[in-house]
Length: 73
Image (cartoon, rainbow, N blue to C red; front, side):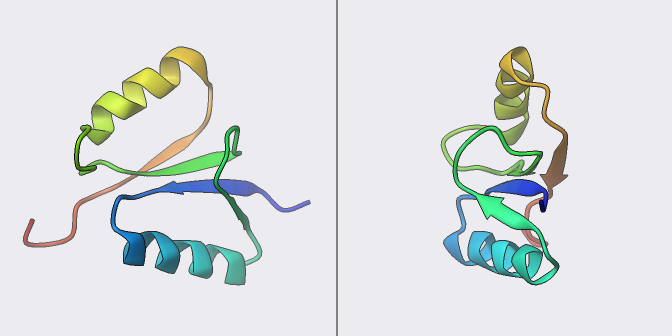
């Protein structure tokens, strides 16, 4: 069974691109919790990604990779 990865990015193009790349590499992307790994955009609009990370770790023990904002932002 492939690992399930949740991609959290408010940029639809980036989220779809990352999801497609992961699926082509043999991973399964999911839209529901709990995934095996979370890719989290730290520059989410409306909520700071680091704040979202703190809230997540209060209730879940999921590994997280933080995605930096695009260059120039």
